[in-house]
Length: 532
Image (cartoon, rainbow, N blue to C red; front, side):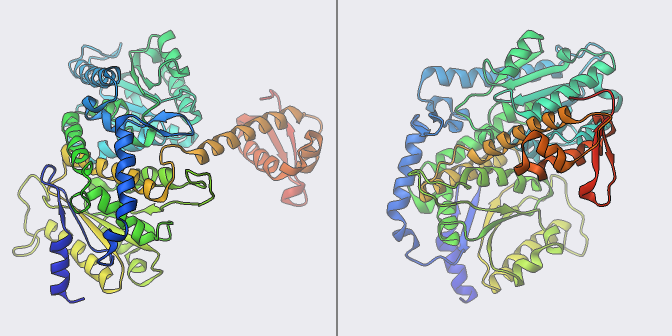
């Protein structure tokens, strides 16, 4: 294809969204001229499925739930007045609470203002807020926001170290829909202990975002936490960023949450249209389907050319992979669907893995994300007539051209500038593309049975650990196989070995390891006191 032909193809297929300023170029995706015609029936069904979802149909049959993250930015579209009122009331609650924090009307017992916000959560309860915080934060933020998103003791210690003596000026947000998410519960317990260790009442620093009557909700009520905010069953964690999950920390930080919602609402309006060439989410979903043959045969590489969007890849990994990675389709047939997502940022990636993208295994397609406006201030010239931003733009265009020369497919998303409104639009675009693509491949995008299976497996390991510790004694060292035999779990001897090695590496566990002739002939006993 000549450059002139490519230019004509670009003009023919460029999708421009006037209400958000976003543009999507699919001209380099190598799709045939009859691509849209061949997919007409399939995309028509996807549009119908999405219309039904927004109208309040039960589209998560496994859990018997509606899916309503679109109502979060336009409550008037909610299927009942009660739901609409709940959404509006929650937003008002978020804005009011944030303003009272900023004004010092809600303050810590030992300081005039809260200066830090610590968000404790995992998965969708953190990835969306992290993206907003990093992409839209500035030196003028009202508070500093930190995130505790794992049950890693060393990670917890690092967060406590970063807080230093500022714990007394820290507001802690605990986010968990069920209140039973283990990683979040563990982080909450560790942080609560940190407050107590310095003579502070955790409840006077704590806020819950959770489901009504969850274990976390009950705890917050019983201990008189500062506030509680709702999480609804009809909003999945990976699509919760425009609920209190994302809006509360963003409002506390000083981010324009109304702009974020407006951008998402505008993109929802654009992507609700049954006009494929003018609907960027439909175009994106069809390009995913074309590039991967509708079965995830290629990976999606996200390359945002803006440091503030470095977390976009991580955010989209959960949104896309947790939504689309399914063993069964809606008819119960085994399909093993999915779409792998990875990415960092440009032009850093040119010094990392673009070499493989251009000359290695052609098992991917790229989505470039560009932001036209470089910065608020006037840029200096690093060379006559050339700024640092000009070079960043040059690297993007150069990389796109270099990949195209080698037959590598790519799309380009263009934002006029990066602000709350355009980020909201970008998030809403990918949410809708995921929903449409899920319909194209006939999977339930709104459940995550694999995640639940992992949680159950972890619970079994902890139960086994308790049994192992109960078997150990101070005066009778035993090998791994002896312990497994005594417990009647010979089929789990490797797990018993891993448990004992972990316990023996941590002195506070009370487990003592005595080396043997080989690693697997070591013996284990219990010191006093026992942790069993």
